[in-house]
Length: 356
Length: 253
Image (cartoon, rainbow over all chains, first blue to last red; front, side, top):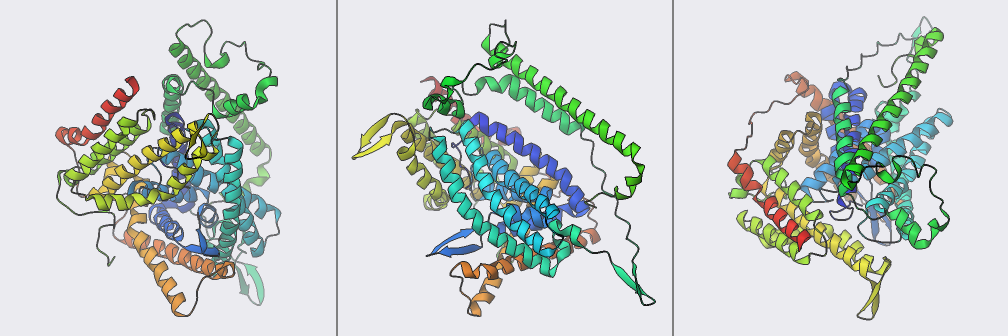
């Protein structure tokens, strides 16, 4: 499933690269919270484990065999951030050392195989664990469903990337059917093995399974013949994260550069989805968008003749508006949340960080 | 680590390519691949010229052709995928040997095959002429986050250890008469994977404690600082610059 060079066009590869770099940056910060100062050796060893497990072949039937992808397994065993990090490192090393997956397609590979699988698997897993009764059995069942869904989700994400930046005009429907169909079959194998592996680890070292942390019962001591809850050990203080300002500024700069300058070099042809729509006549009934006569319609600024300047300016304005709107929403949500916390001071006992 | 300290893809030799600082080589390979990918696929002669450029590098690095070609086998799955493209793609069709093939699909297959093969060949040359440790130092010099480089270092350092552990578990299973032949045996393999995870994780904790006791404070000391002179940079970038000239010719002609 590693994407080679030349499969996805250059602008989309660049955008996927930026997305992947952002995801890895976020994971680096998150992994420090999941593993504190042990991050480097533990994440490295887990990455080596994923690398080894990908070589473990499982016989399917009649001489064919498959191998584990490991995204869901990593997310459940060590947590989503470390999981993304480990799979990304494995992909990076596979690309540089083993020439497995193109260097320019590294962003696409990391986005599809590390980020999408891990995030989907962990979201499904957390949701199911919350709903199902708090038992070990439900952890295994959730692991099964999470792994089952994560593989076709990655296939669908790949199809989406292909739709935007594919270099060959293969009908999207057949790509989607083939990719999701094949990967659903792969997903069943992945799910069975992942669930069994998680079950095996839970049976021996339940404390190592990140996804089963809520299951630990509080330690009880027998004092004078009756059970008393042991005093909880003080939670270690989380490592202070570095200031996000540099990350934010770099992200803003890259978005502005992409939107303002690189966008001009992007393909002038309609994107894959629009093209398919046009070919199949789907868009015959499409009415013009309500904002068609807005000053920024069709990614250009009205009244500016030079197409390059106009397109670039529209991109820069778009990024600016998005950032302002996003920051506003985030700010409003945070204000409301702190407001809630002030009105309900009784909930302060549950303020211990979950990941500590 | 009984198997020596070089990975199997590395080919020891003394050549001008081996002697280049690793980060110049990494940057040059990346630039070369980017140039190759942005070449128009209609300029078929350009890809032949790229192949000639890579062959020159291989000659300078004393990497035999047989070694390079064997390593290229890694992309066989894509060749299969690329060969499917002319049959499923849409658009204008031509008759070739009695089969109706799509013109766009043929171009797409050519595009993926040519660019993919050149990319794989460039990566193989990089791995064949650069030691693992140098490669990681090069990544660090190219401003990859230090934590990411450390994780990659540990993965490479312990990759062989974990893989060998897995191999020993397989030998132990097989010497007790176990043979994985179908779905019914998945449980056994999954238990092995679980045991492997626990062993890896516990080894990670031991490694961390050992590092702490030797004064690790979150960063690895760099003993041999690699720097590259202007001459070395220009020598390494001869490849992507030559490729860029070919690419520009491909766009204009």
